[in-house]
Length: 250
Image 1 (cartoon, rainbow, N blue to C red):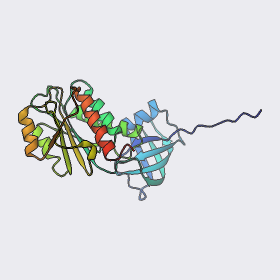
Image 2 (image 1 turned 120 degrees about the vertical axis):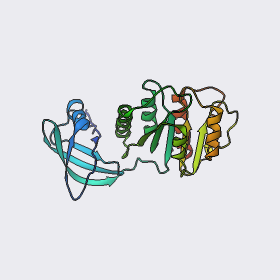
Image 3 (image 1 turned 90 degrees about the vertical axis):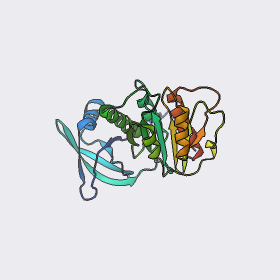
Image 4 (image 1 turned 120 degrees about the horizontal axis):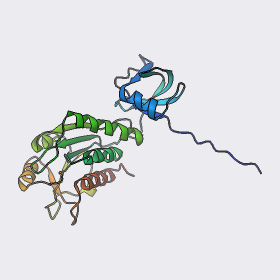
């Protein structure tokens, strides 16, 4: 009996590198956190095939040609446009959450195809964001983007007040505001079409004054059902519902 042997080819590891200027420059240097991850975690060796990303939507195939103490260099062999990016822009605005819950939301929203994430402080928000935490969220987004084979990591920013956060979504075609005290939705999330901004509060939710502010800025209030959801559950759920309605999960 002849035994068939199937060789499973692993997907080339992916790394974010800023300002790739291909084809003008065919050699790229990876250093910093990405190099540490490549060397100590992934055990990348000379001759390995990798994929480089620069948030342009392109994916650059490359071969590692040199490993040094604090960096590696790779020779780019070609470029393609990634096919995993969402066709419709989804913008998640999420109240800052306690502990590592904001990181969890950023990770899952990235996997669901969200293209932009804004974290904000509001009246009942008890968590805070500083520059170190913001950079950590960006790192989480990059790692999640690599894991789910996206070509871009979502843009992540912080707003110190709700009005600034809401105003940042003024150009989106759909603007939905999830509010736990609403009994009915004024928009149908299952019938979305076009760019969409989604707002979910922190653990403390929103005040009625904040909801009135959102209405004045053309946001439609929505409910996520009869049960009160944890803030992180609500954020991920509304992203999934919007992504499905826009055809991103089909």
